[in-house]
Length: 343
Image (cartoon, rainbow, N blue to C red; front, side, top):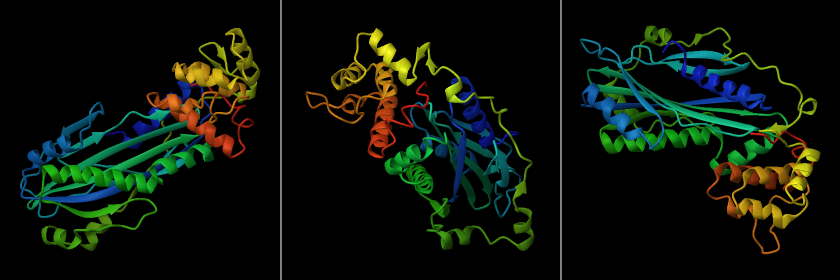
């Protein structure tokens, strides 16, 4: 790939930002890697079985082949590490240089006006005389805004753990699926940010792949790339300097109250707020949140909460959970209530 996977993901994040006119201004990228060795397997069979193992419903997964070296080397190659800079944020990426096959899996991002989270898995496959070596690289890219970043990062960590824990768990889940298809799979190494390196099958792997020489280690030294910007950063106005609109709906505090009044609703009515969630009316829910006079996590007169009706609407659930947590932390109404709520 001429453009690195991280650069492509960065382009997606910034294009989304430009289209949504949002306020996300902080980018964080974390990368982890697992090294597998699969003995006594044909290269094409390994690639097809691995793709089949990691494929999930409705998640794009691709397999690209390149020429298999002939004769097969005694020791497999490795991806080339590259230090890149995306929108001012340093990151580590890998190029599948010399691989006979490359598999990528790119789930759709999770995002709203404040938060963008994207993950991607890449597997570089190298054939050698003993079988196939697989280097799986997992990226987590997250964009937040400086005002609410701490809140959203805290919620994300509480739900699925730290970035390192998330990366390690995803690598291990994919390894487990690969082992179901290819039982001879050995795990040479799992390396995730902030966690101890794991080498469960190190000794067994050494029997198939001899240690690298000093010259080979030097040849695999990281390459430093010039700073890369995926997409020019859009010139954004300060939120206070422009109307907070979503499809023509004003989501400022005063604007939201006027919108609700025009709909015959009272911006301070907890029952009407919960009823909007019951109807799955996400825009009205956001208007109530923007109007900043209800309690996001509190029950109505019947004992129901808005969150209890958001189980089938992941974006509404994310918003309600976030604002309920913000209220507990004393940030709502206030800073978040004054921020842009448009999608």
